[in-house]
Image (cartoon, rainbow, N blue to C red; front, side, top):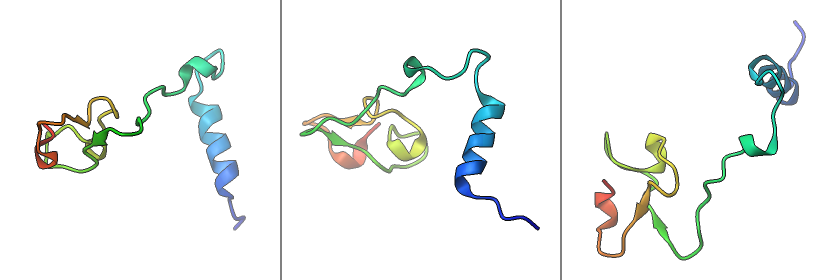
Length: 71
């Protein structure tokens, strides 16, 4: 059996799932963490955190909010 490299696997998956016109810079995710801000990385079911698939801006913890209560 032939070994498959991660690079070729990613290339194949991207080729199969690319939009009809191909990928463009506007398709990139623009949401990034900002220095000096606190974000909830993990949390319980339904909480706004990175681990539950929320964006960085959605997972931001306000200064008055307890980091354990990022909902």
